[in-house]
Length: 159
Image (cartoon, one colour):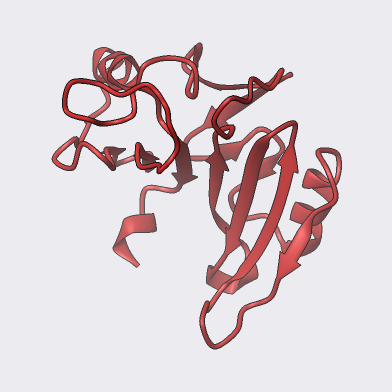
């Protein structure tokens, strides 16, 4: 199974701008979604599910519509039969440096000032390389592969 990151539109079946009901219906195909309504700690609704070891979270902020989708990679030792694709590369099985270099070759601006959390503004792709798990690491001690990726619109970081 492949899920395609489509910045700045969304991830696979979850598109930015979807309502809560549309989001729940879309991710129900992947697994039983959990809905966390906004509360005093979090001022947005959150829809969360998992498919074959890959976690998905959709944040519904502005007007209770999806503003961001985060995809979490598999846990240590898991090798799910799922690919999270960006420009033909599997985000969680292709080295992080290669993902960023490919984005730069495609003309995207890559901001890697924080190597633990690089991003691609303009289409708003934000990656993380932090984990406490025992995973392969580069010479700086960073995980070789990304551990999560957020897809949002180009205004997401302005809020």
